[in-house]
Every structure is written in C-alpha cells, then in structure tokens.
Length: 178
Image (cartoon, rainbow, N blue to C red; front, side, top):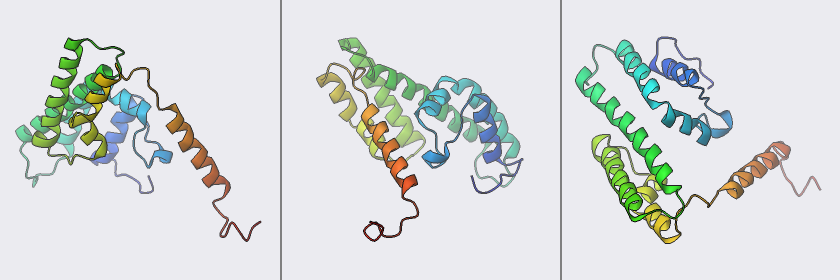
C-alpha cells in the first residue's frame, strides 16, 4: 500500500474492481484479502472477471508474449477456479453429507486441482495441498462434515497476539522494563 499506483496500471484497476464489489485489502492481513473479502470475490466473480478481462486487455503492452486468446483462456481458468473453490468450501461445510454429496465434492476438488496445477501452474502451498491431496475430504468423511467445526479460537488468538504486539511494540528489553 506504500507506493502510489499509476491510474492506468492493472494493479490500480484491480483495486478499483475489487472496491466495486465491496472488497478491501486489509492492512492487518498484509494487504491480502481476509476471509470475508475472499468470499465476496467468489460470490461476485462473474462481475469481477468481466471487468478484469476488459481492464487487462486495455492495459496490456504490445510486446506481451501472451496472445489475447491465451489471456482470455487464462482468465476463464481463474474464473472457473474461483467458482469451484466456492462450491468446494460450500460442500465441505455440510453436516452429515450424503454419498452423492461426497462424490460431488471429490469431483470438484479434482477439477480444481487440475486447473490449479496443470492449467494455471500455481504452486501448491500447504492449504491447497491439504485440499487437493484428500486431507480435507478425508476429514469431511471421517467427522461427518465440517460445517459445525469452527476456527473462532484461531481468529481470537490472532487478535490477542496483535493486541499484545501493539502494546509492546516499543519495549526493547522486556526484563529491563520490569
């Protein structure tokens, strides 16, 4: 957030498109999207990607190595991936899923993994690894759904840690201050 964005840059247009659907980059989250904003992106993905397609074609440089066709195909993959992630997270939040719901979730995970690793060639970081390598699906099956399991205690822990950091940011040596 420290640098000003040039108004004709894609980064500037991305921020404007995100703001148009009510998404803010949170400074406390390293400028990334928090859970609420990520859900908004998933829900408003069609509107967002319509705008981003237009923006990316307007700001692209003539010397770009990707054709417009390839660029549109990449945008299709990202839009489809966001839709699949929305479906997967919805599926995994079910309580006592039926056998068909488990199969549907497994199919969506397999398709999302293909788009993530094969089409977009995104690195498979730990959260994606847990999703794609059946860890999340196995827990979903074993525990009778994940919808009634929350992470509120984790979020609360983050808030307590941030509060402590703010209170003690200028203490150089805690033992000497006692």
